[in-house]
Each structure stands twice: as C-alpha cells, then as structure tokens.
Length: 386
Ligand SMILES: *Cc1c(COP(=O)(O)O)cnc(C)c1O
Image 1 (cartoon, rainbow, N blue to C red):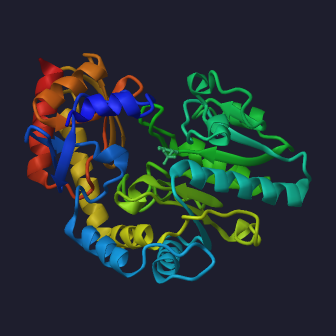
Image 2 (image 1 turned 30 degrees about the horizontal axis):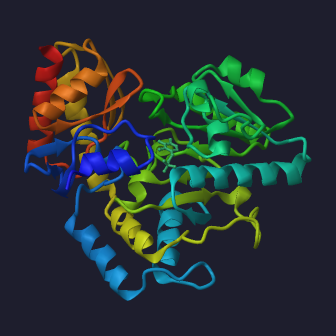
Image 3 (image 1 turned 90 degrees about the vertical axis):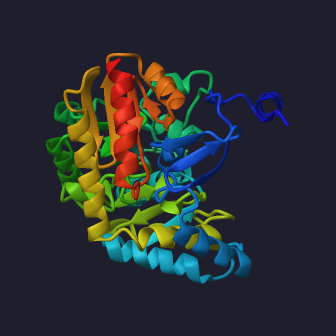
C-alpha cells in the first residue's frame, strides 16, 4: 500500500507533511516504513511527553480502555475526578473543565473571562487583550485571539473583541487595557510564534494589571505546560498566580485532552449548561494524563532542567548557530542555514526536529535518555555547521 499516495488523494490537504511514513516507536526512537530509525526531538509537537509507547502510560491507557472507554458527562468516572483533583492540588487552582484540544481549552478560558467580566462590569466589557505573534488555536475564536494575520486570511469575519499588543511592551499593554478589557491572555513562551519567552517584567506587569483592575489573566500553557519548561506549568517560573490556565498537548501523553484550570476568582463562573463537551473528561484520555502528571515531581523536573542546560550549552556559539531561545525543553534555534533545510538534513541523518517561524524548534520527550539527546544534538550541530 502506498500510504503517501492514498493520503494525498483522500486526506484534506491542510498539512505540509514531510516525506516520511512512520510506523512504530519506542521512547525517543521512531521508525519509518523502510525500517530506518530516527531520534525524535519533536514528539508530535510536544505531545508524547514520555516518548512513544512509554510502558507506564501504555499500561494506564490500555487498562482503562479495557474497563470503560467513554460515558459522556452525564455520569461520574474516576479518572476524570482524580485528574482534576491532582491538577488542582499541584497548582492551587480550584476547578477544571476538560475538553479535547488546545483550541478548546482556550475557547473555555475565553468564555470564562468574558462571563466573569460581563457579570462584574457589564456586557460592554468583553475585549480580550492578546499578544502579537501569539498562537491560540484554529477555531474562529481562537484564530481571532491569535496575533498573526496570515492565519486570519480567507476566514473573515472572525469573532470580534480581540486586540493584539506587542509582546514585552509594557507601554503597548497599558495603551490597550481599558474599561472594556475582559481578559489578558499570554503564552509564557510563544511557541508557534518562534519560541520567544516573555520577559519577567512583562509577565509581572500583566499579573499586576490583572489584579489591580480585576481583569482575569489567562495563561495559555497548551505548549509550555505539563513539565515542558522544567516546571509543571511555565507561569510557575515567574511567581505569578493566573486566574485561568489552559493546557493540552503534553497533558495526555499522546491522547487528545485539553484542560482549563480556573483559580479562586473565576472558579464558580461556569454554571450548568454554560459549557460542555461530549468527549471532555474521557476516561481513557484522563488515565493517560494521570500517568503523565503523577510522574512530574521535583526530581523529574530537575532532570528536565538539567537536560535543557546541556542543550543550551551545547548549541551556544556552535558554528552555524546564531542564537538559542526558549525555556526548559522548549528550544528555538536561529540557524545560519534556513531552518527548513536544517530540519530536512537532520531527517536525512536520522534526527527529527520541528520549525517555528524562521527557527529550528526542539520539543524532545521529557524523559529522553541523555545518550540519545547528545547523539541527536551532535548531529544537529554538524548539520548547522556544514
Ligand atoms: C498548539 C497550541 C494551541 C492549539 O492546540 P490544538 O490542540 O492544536 O487545538 C493553542 N495554544 C498554543 C500555545 C499552542 O501551542
């Protein structure tokens, strides 16, 4: 069977796929139809947090799949309740709404912020301030939140009520926030926007304004969350307390799940009937997520930060590398060669990487063994320097 030809004929042409048919994987190694092996530094865009078919994760997911695979939200199930409890205990947040993707986690976050602000200050208070170069998803509302025009083309009109300010510009933030502002929405490190971390001062000012003016602060941790940056959630590097945290990607370890965490201020905003999802809180996805979140303790997160330190040090001033940005194991590399060319040459040599804007982007498994990580980074360095 020619997988590529069939895919090209029948699957909607929304993706620019690499010429690579993947069949199976274990840990950080993935294999193609020809049997060639690759060290994977992309993890399905930060999703397979513990690599491919991790033993503990697979055991948790299959055990649940053999017991009860779905119930709808008309009934209580244990994995959903336990996951919500664990997320709240580890973050201090109060309530969780489960969905199936990052975009949906953000839709919920936006609904919560708008309802909170409309009830508190009136219906005119509905504008969400987000950042230029942000990425919040592909639904029409999360596209409106996304501060990159090229995603908007051909899909207008988008949901109204979003303004985008320059990231890290406190002046622009002050100019945009007013009595109609219902929420401030940020990524601590802009992932799709080019792996650009926000400055400490800017994050602090978002948190301060949010408190002073009673505007919910939404932190989109879809990509940065679940151990990716070396803390459970990236906002924890900055000592702030957001009102709403959305997450997805690595949370399920490879199964689709989104979560919107709500803090004290907004915990009771959503009432019965306000929001819902047929699949949300699915027991198999929640069992997978439990097995991910349970293992992200201090010792494990320390190891993530150590591996991050190794990658930053190895790439700093390496030939063909202009700069390295990011946090934890979310790393952007500005290369002399075009990023696309670096990724293609790495693939040829058995290493899978991603791009973000004009950078090479790495999102390796959080538990990638040091030997595999250093082997892959050596290959990447060689490609960059040639
Ligand atoms: C990937 C991503 C999203 C969208 O997630 P989907 O699961 O593709 O809907 C939203 N926000 C951020 C920061 C992301 O990285």
